[in-house]
Image (tube, rainbow, N blue to C red; front, side, top):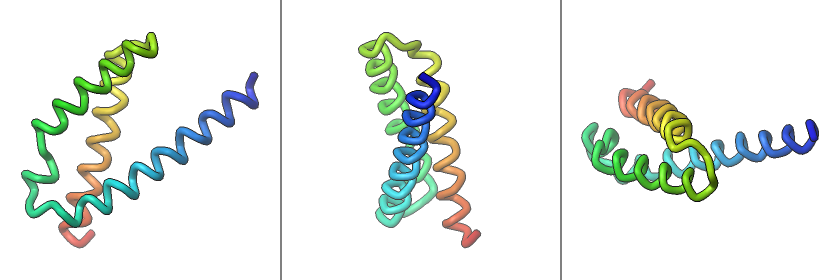
Length: 85
């Protein structure tokens, strides 16, 4: 069981890495900070992920917290990239 869980966790980390590359590619199309932060898009994403959580019999609150943290991380990285950091 532990090996199976470890393998799944490795896949999750790899998928987050792939997501990161998509986020960075999408950054080229964003003209300003407002486009990076996109609160309405974030709200819609969170709502959708909460629904997905319910479909998987997971806690929508936990999945929301996870995605809010991921979004925050990627927005912060993108803002740093814009500043040349």
